[in-house]
Length: 231
Image (cartoon, one colour):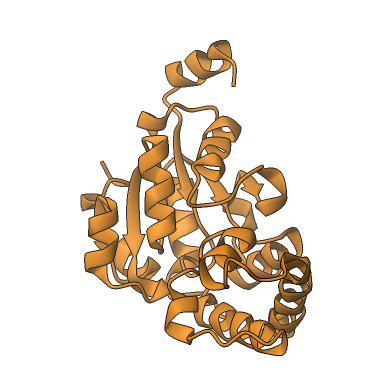
């Protein structure tokens, strides 16, 4: 990101709202948990669903490194990842948007926020979730896992979102739902609002460094004026 572009947009007061999507705008974290569990089961790995759930939000390679034995035959990792994607794709037509998600995005856009979706999902998964949300007119830029070299909890997705928005970290707020979202934001120096809609206990989100916590998009929208997105 060039300093010329940044300073030009700073003059115009651009503020960027960066959003995770899975578990933040669309209720998919438990679907990912079940489909990862089945993909690993098919490959002969016994992994508890609680452990899987707490890794959702990581990039696929980091998720498998965390959950599967270190001495495994890693040549099978791609088959596991493909099986997960195939199983999860069966839900594309009926993915549920979280309460308040489209209204939150539209309200922020109406208030002048530059909206970026910064997701760890693949392009086809992200397209299915955007169709579910139905607020594309409010979204300025979209990033998928294909657009970054390293996924969360590395800061790359957050930093790439800042670059796409053309703002420094101080002029951005990230909204996510997992510990890995929060950790990536802390590394990137971006304020993070965490939602409990992904199923992660609030104490873990606070411990990771979340600045604010709300129940779901609808709850954040109700408290928007007193949040980091309303100040």
